[in-house]
Image (tube, rainbow, N blue to C red; front, side, top):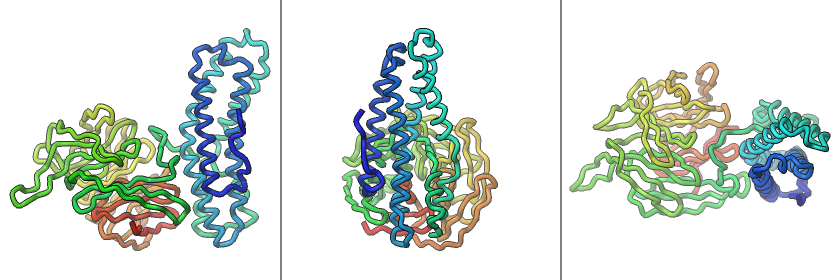
Length: 449
């Protein structure tokens, strides 16, 4: 196998990012070829084991290169501190995708172990297999052993207190922190994000290509679709947007009226539309996409209960009713935290936590405001923005901490799902304005697009 990239410690951030992506794709391709083999004995031949060892070694070298790059890119000055933060941001985004390859590697491990157990007596060179098994154990241990280092490093960067004596040790223990994705996100590999935002009764698609930490290029596509309002929305795979319900635009001859349709859009416009929902509904707010389903909580409807919770299959668009929410809510904001969903609404102070596996709710805490409460979650960090304040939720205790950091937004009602990139969340509000929330420094900036 060819050497995938060289001189990682001196590469520019963008080149380094591309090299990591190319390496990941190359490893995925080889792993797929190996896992597709239908002959176990062929799979565990000596040459195949050598290939596996090369794959794992290369994967480890990529991560080592990332560590070296982070150390060498920081010269401990204020200006270079931003370069360090930028490098860390690129590395962290790439690492998020490692969950995808980790699962494939584990499948390879499992196949090797099974084959070794079944065919050990037939193999001539068992030392190679034992060595590979030892390598498996070592890598699995290194993947799992570190948990909190990214948080520590983020705090250090935010406080600008990096010291020469501490930097290398901090960078060395950056963990491979895997996030659960239902698919391999194209947005990170393509180094761009997609935001859908309403504008003058139409829907526009904003593609933001990130060049450096504070530099970006934005391109805007205005979709011709007439946009209903008070719809529910959810991010779907492949940069597409799912819309459900809402109200048609009122006119002199026709008042605003709830509809029973759903539609899927992408950068090129409307993919399809269907009117097969059994009841009209609106004010669903922001949905959560998890395990091939979009989850929505609460609504306004003349034909259904207002505390209705539904999930929609993204493949066949079948609708399933879930357990009713304890309160009638609407215009909810939601966020996925592990296998649970946080739910807020402007019509209640309660913040609900929905357990996906058990289909039950609990009250996680209260925020005393009747304004919309935007939720942003990354790993186990959860932030709420409402009525000019930023709150931090401590998941274990359910305590909300008002950070006393004033923010100014023209509206506090989401019009599109938040998109995470590095230490930022990008999101659109009801007036179509695009904002960037830095969850490390806890600052919000309105973007000029």
